[in-house]
Image (cartoon, rainbow, N blue to C red; front, side, top):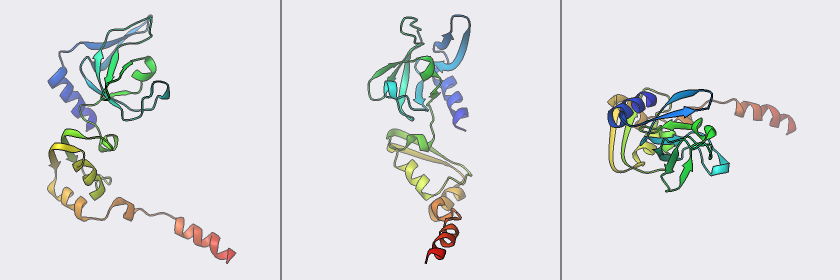
Length: 174
């Protein structure tokens, strides 16, 4: 769902913007990114102090051969990073992101899609609600939201073999 939302929002709000074209010298190829897109890094890169979940905006799609970059991203914290081949491989659109990626962040407006998923429980709903600073919209099946709020958290439903293993290994020692 996230990818579909990202494609739709990009086409609607930024579809006419200049695309990011990667020129490898021997071959050019298009990417899904356009100048002005909100973006998120999906993996850590400690060399340039980027963590999984870092948000930013693609501000340049002009390659700089001397610096080995394809463009620039200004991070939400205000710092600008050059978009290298390594960083480009760790980049995704961020018109819509998962709650998992949004943990620890706040946003003016939050839209929470309540899906029919085992991940949707009251702690998940709480996480979604507490990301919003000004405006919150929950959409999806009402019964699923009620079930998530009133049901047991996933951590209580989890079944493991740990208790049996401990009993098996501890009882012989007693």
